[in-house]
Image (cartoon, rainbow, N blue to C red; front, side, top):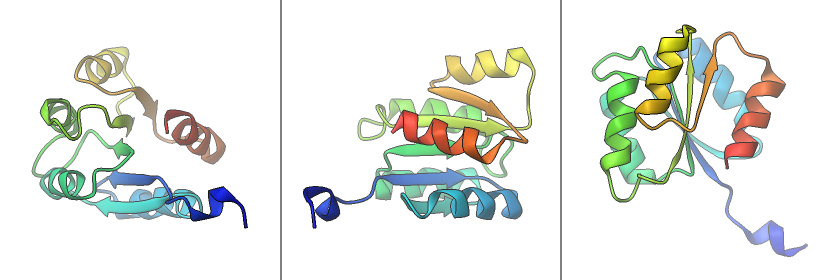
Length: 126
């Protein structure tokens, strides 16, 4: 065994209301990361505060609390303000991307996405 075997996996929180996409993203990431899942904004915010993930994969169109609001709120929380945020959404207009980056996202990716592109971006951000 080497030193890396004793290190904890990085934590990724996925906040996505489409169950199929949520499960697909989790499946892609679970072999390399500890994955937490939330299907609405309120649960996602509470889970982020509890788990303090290294990365949040955030959809924009969520029930209870939207992605822009969540992203901005994460940046206001002392324990989450430096957490990396990857927005993954069907909203592909340039204005959506600019707004996402303006409220604090580290990167913005549109659906559908290639598995390798998604996984590589997660690795890069963490």
